[in-house]
Length: 324
Image (cartoon, rainbow, N blue to C red; front, side, top):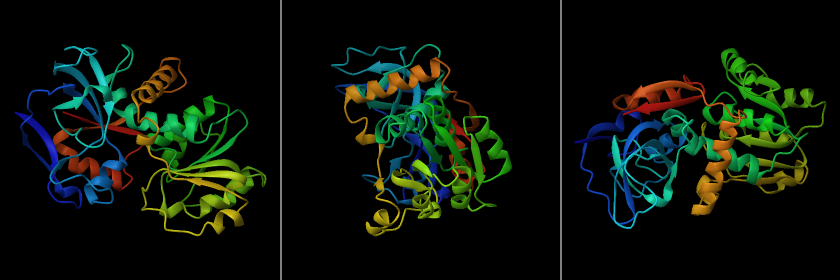
């Protein structure tokens, strides 16, 4: 019997229920995967609390994982039992085995571990589109990355630095500051002890930043706007502290004709071609040493409640996985 973590009603971590589920044979165009590692992400808490609406209740939590193919349905010709694969998709990854549409899978290079793949598919591809598509980082750009010691933050800091940017990161503790500095940040701001807007102005000598990547949300807005130079871009891609409240477009004018966007991964890897381009670019960055993917925490799948409590209390750093 397959084990999964399901949500029967939205709420706190206590609603994550570890239980038996039935998984039928894979249907037409589907692949059955035995999972080896599952990514832990803030978006998982958004669905659990109801901030993001699941299609129906109950649902299996989770959005990315890695494993091996154990069976294929009719019409599937490019995947076979034994293939090492990984995926990002909305919901369904907190389980030991599952069926998934083959077109959402990518094959793993031999040198990429299952644990690395399980955190790269959502976090890594998010960093890919943020730095290569939403605002294309070029040498000499000055960037501000909030939560620079988080799972996305550490990858973004490394990759932005490899692309030639001057990287400023915000973190919540000295331990996280040291980690961010070791992973690409040129400067780190402890936002619990310092006014991050004032420090950005000091670090940049008043020139401010070309782009702010903000996955924190409510707690860092509107300060993020004040860190941008004229015609800079505010990229709000997460809500770790709550959603950014509604604001007047005149705020963008008042801060220097700014651009603002609220992107999501689905709109950047919506086609098979886009998915493969993102995965190939991301895996190449790992294989050529531009991107290191340390796994800082690992939890048993049955301990998903504790994993969510740790994530929401900021007790974790970097990337975490669940192990079936």
